[in-house]
Length: 77
Ligand code: SF4
Ligand code: SF4
Image (cartoon, rainbow, N blue to C red):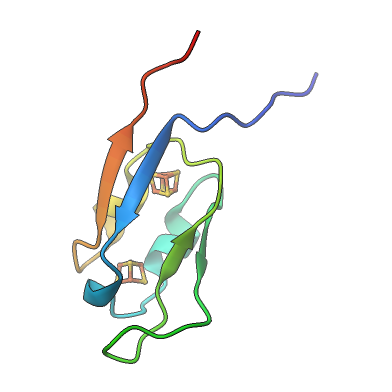
């Protein structure tokens, strides 16, 4: 049986608040965060979101710099 990975959430990322520690990358269960190649104003790489966020809040909980806001998406019919 295959299950489609449906996005049920999304996040906003305050890239200028990021210190580039990468804790969020490993913490994201569906592995939809990856570090940018670009740098923010402070010279740090920052996470970028791909499709498939579940809204689980793991990134928000682990980030020491409060970079994430998590939004749960209402189910579609
Ligand atoms: S955990 Fe926070 S500070 Fe660390 S890389 Fe991720 S967004 Fe940046
Ligand atoms: S809310 Fe969960 S699934 Fe979405 S980016 Fe954060 S850790 Fe990943």
